[in-house]
Length: 114
Image (cartoon, rainbow, N blue to C red):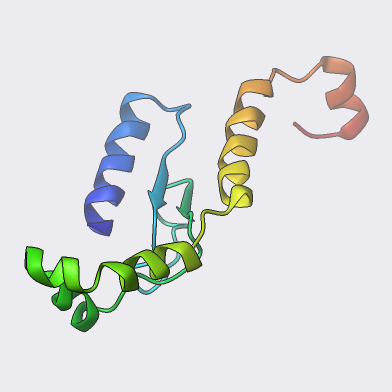
């Protein structure tokens, strides 16, 4: 799925160059990799925890097993709350893009760069 996101972000940035592309995940389900060579602006893991391992998820395959293990799953979700700072990071990046304006001539000459 990550490679699909990389391809989608590239396509989006070609179509809308000034856009932002966030990959938002509830849980981390892969080994973290550098996104520097991609068009993805940020990968956000909103619960700041790993996904349940596949051997544990197998216990939830059938409706009966989901009923049997329901409280364990509720406890897992309750212990893995959403973190506001992750959402704030996304909001800050969006706000910075909204606030971005062409630099003023005097400011550029004073700084020596833009």
